[in-house]
Length: 132
Image 1 (spheres, rainbow, N blue to C red):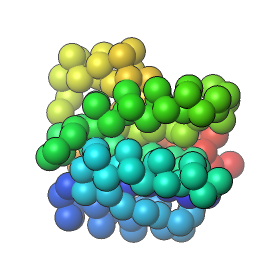
Image 2: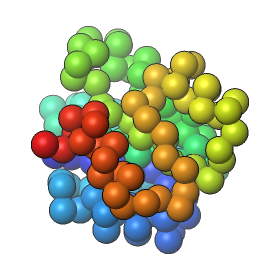
Image 3: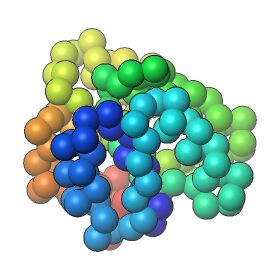
């Protein structure tokens, strides 16, 4: 499985890599713009990401903006809904406004509040059929 972790905080990024590395090849992006570029490159290579973890608060382009672009591009590329990347929003924000934005306006798969709990992460990956 190919995984993209978009996170500007070094410690959070390393933690996500450590948690997810046993399940697949992990690439990293430091902001939303890099995440969109990595997404485009992965599709151009014919090896799209199965899982994308997007921090909401990042410089240059935040996770909410990146999510909307990723979902729009999947539509433009003709990706069937069942084949869309599973996108987990990761953030220190736990405001209803952010949750609504991520789910209903962005189309995220799920939402995790930092600090990330390993068991909760694994449960969500199983729930969304990312892991068996």
